[in-house]
Amino acid sequence: MSSITTADTHRVDRQPDSWLGVEIRHLAALEAVARAGSFGRAAVELGYTQSAVSQQIAALERIVGEKLVERPGGPRAISMTEAGDLLLRHAEAIVNRLDAARADMAALSAGETGTLRVATYQSISARVLPIVMRRFMGAWPGIALELSEPSNDDTLYRGIESGAIDLGFGSLPMPDGPFEATELLTDPHVLLVPSDSPLAARESLSLADLGDVALIGSNQCSSASVVEGALRERGIPLDYAFRSDDNTTLQGLVAARFGVALMPLLAIQPGDERVKVVALDPPVPRRRLAVVWHRDRHRSPASRAFIDIARTVSADVERELVGP
Image (tube, rainbow, N blue to C red; front, top):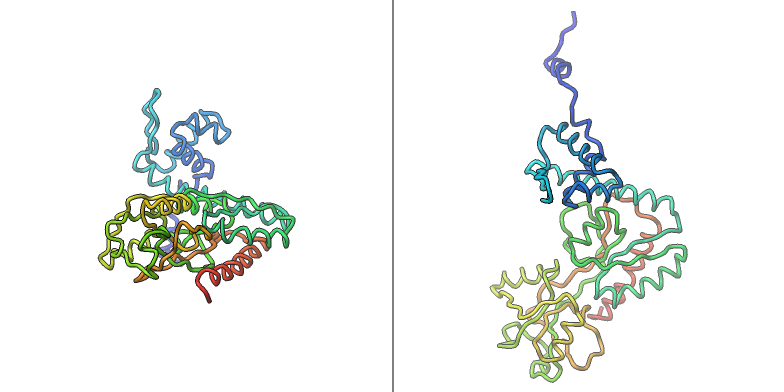
């Protein structure tokens, strides 16, 4: 006589999992409704009718057994319930992976033709990227480079995760997520002072040497956060009189004697006789620049070649900046 084990009993009694009825279109509808703030705008974005979007949300609510969207009616915007916010985090990740898969298939079928989408920012664009592009386009004439300049690190990494960006220049450390990077160079932070200031006669300066001189610098990018964290550990909180993400603005303000700028060396436009670079003593952690991509996405031969060229060019630029 055969016996039935406890495990067998559990396997026989278990009911079909209703969550297996969740479809990608349900999650895409939830993500679109949350982002657009209404069923109508989400329908336009997805190419559905408004009633179809409403039905997909209703079906998703039945499957998960929770109300996901508050529907106040009239002109008032919809909002996510607590359960909706919780599920939305998973939906966004799944939709992003689907977008990344679509981008992978396009890259795979492109072979040696197609588009390589690269995100960059000011200092890389001015000193590194032009040389990389010239060498890359000479070696890969069939690949079109599509450049973008995300407004901040969060936008950069969202673009990489969704597949909208193939490669991005950024600062280390990276945030948590499906990211991988190759470090390109390290960039020292320095003080930029007016060339006709008494401070310009110094070979090095500490922040304490500035006295009442205003300090200016960049906004809270990852590199700035690392520097400020290191200074806080030394008991030196930074008090900026002005912040800007435009390096030209910071350099112009220094030249106008508005203040002294704490900047990465690579961000300073060379050849400007109005200003002088002075070493920061004691030094703070260097900015670590890297090229970043989605860890789980297919990397085409063209993207690998771009990274190799970027690594070679960055080594040359680093030697030029700070010596061997």
